[in-house]
Length: 302
Ligand SMILES: Cc1cc2nc3c(=O)[nH]c(=O)nc-3n(C[C@H](O)[C@H](O)[C@H](O)COP(=O)(O)OP(=O)(O)OC[C@H]3O[C@@H](n4cnc5c(N)ncnc54)[C@H](O)[C@@H]3O)c2cc1C
Figure: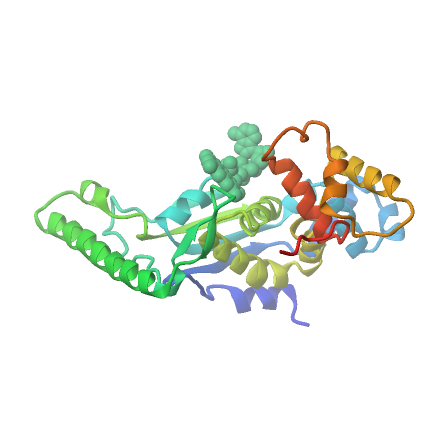
């Protein structure tokens, strides 16, 4: 097993590619699993070592959202990301950021491009999400149009610079697909919060690719025990609200004579009273999805 210092040296400045021309790379890392444990033991005292090993303690901290020990580790990244993705990324206010200045320097001459088979339809249910891929012939045309548009925007930008327009003004019509670069430094707690939100299926695919690259390629090898706990309790874990717990209790109580999976009508019969009169109810849909994933309610087959 390589030591933490060796792991950092292997990862430092290694550019993990994302999208057509983006990347993430680790610049620096302070702390490891042991730093989290060390910080926690200060609050619990020496006795903790006897009752719990490091892995158990990390899992306890993660389970109970005892978050400050995770703030003891810090990571610094260099990222190259298209502006529209960056706009989502920068909403995470608990990081320190220094971004490439297109007032000071000519904008990075690279744009995020979309392959013909990568265009996605609007999701039917989720207003913020994507659905299936568009047909290839439609995608071909969209990709060609994208190429012409990006080229013309870039040409206009350069024409403005050549005409003597200031860089801070010439950039105003550059499209959101233009790549930017930034240093991004964040503590482990807030990084995990970012990853939980941006690796989630509800996040846009492009930022999900960045978050997954950061998580799987950098955080996982540097903090193996924290990563394991994070996956178990946050990323792949699930919580039940009071209402959802009540639905399960009622399902079991109303049909004591048989085992799950219960049917959709049985689920609908025990749903929460506040959902009953709604034709569309996201909370009910989410509850159903959870119970289906646990095998408690059967999936409808058409
Ligand atoms: C799937 C998805 C869809 C989204 N859709 C939209 C959208 O449509 N429109 C939109 O505007 N945003 C949207 N967002 C952004 C979202 O609302 C958050 O701004 C973003 O995810 C950052 O989360 P955060 O504030 O928890 O993170 P951070 O800014 O890193 O903050 C971490 C935590 O620190 C605390 N904190 C930080 N700053 C403050 C503060 N000033 N006051 C109090 N507490 C603070 C909070 O507890 C916060 O949760 C979306 C995010 C996701 C993941």
